[in-house]
Image 1 (cartoon, rainbow, N blue to C red):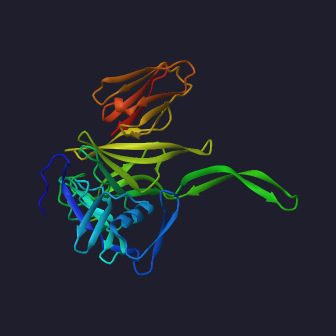
Image 2: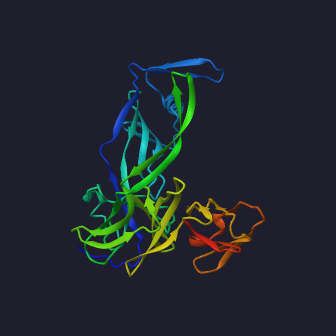
Image 3: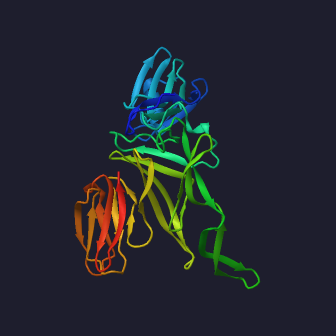
Length: 368
């Protein structure tokens, strides 16, 4: 197999495959069906027999669909209502359409697609994720924000992301057998003997299956890297987000940290940068304790919220971009509990939110 010489991942094309056969369903049989609608005077009208094009349009609109395109063929008229979003052009792949047959009946057609981007560097396209057993494998969802449109998410294995040989790699989770979750709350109990109901507290503890890290494994079973989550972090799911922003690749895990002293858990996230050329996995971000910045990964349209603690006499919030430049300063008034920052005013990629006061606190936020 020929190796890629592309130093940075880039979309080189699309694999478009129809998944299975078209599913065709008759929604109006001209020989036996009818439907009703109300005219402009709110009088009921019953339609029977073959449908005209105008009545077919009416039936489709009453079914909650909007016709985007129409096409006349030798087999009847086609009313296209939905297109698969993975195409470069809006009408590349029709997904749902109504078919008015020559006898005046109306059918609806569903066509399933599998459209995935071909990435010249680390997604070969010849070997898909289903080549591996899904059990015990972390799913990678890839999002490319360096193209004019967001590349479709998909499950990928990699060839040159973690090393530069011709073997494919995947990542598998590391599990713990210890305490993985604490749930607290209350429940209502009804005492039939006394004839009253009352609330009782409960604490539920779950053990095992907490994801504490991952290993990069070659297809022949060789472990080439092991990464252990630190700070007591446990991942929520056996899946990760793979982002490309400004030419850099980030691997993101969402999860939590257990606080056994208060029988609770705090939301947390770990973000690693996959350094091109060195194949190193470097932790660049975590959200545990200190000021709380949400969301961890923000769209340009998002409002980023900074929840302030009572510690350290915070006087100002600063946002610093990846080049070390201060992009925003927001003064904090005494007693103020939160600061809101428009993500549209920040640089794409990693930014550091600094809380300036007697005690310096910092968190990072990624802007797509």
